[in-house]
Length: 178
Image (cartoon, rainbow, N blue to C red; front, side, top):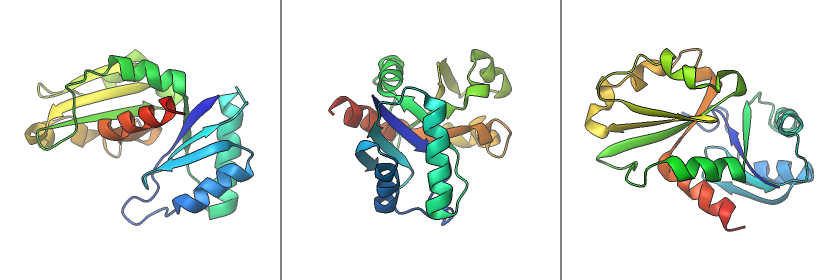
């Protein structure tokens, strides 16, 4: 089965530095195959026959602690989950100079449509809930007037990992073309 592991908070602002080549070796040492990393923000695509995602997360988090001395939260999504999310994000939602679109992957305890109620959305915000994620879309020049700036540091923020839509779409393509 093909999965993507999304690591939260690595290589951000010089903190929790993990070299992708070494991270790839950590995944391979766990017995995962066809391991591919994408950019430096902790995106690892791999294959495993294991179907229990909780077992995968436990093994990966323990290996990262052992190999790097860091406690890093890991979120796993299957190709099927990524493909389903890819289908519902409008093609014209981009991440560029004119607009921002971010995919906020949610930890299980926050994975509910009611999570939107915690956001205090403003008129400039467009947010969609889809199983496992929020997709947040705004015009770039409205970002500072968005509820997005107020989410940082909240309890909810600590239970998600964010990728811009360009990164998300690239992960989808890499998983699809295996």
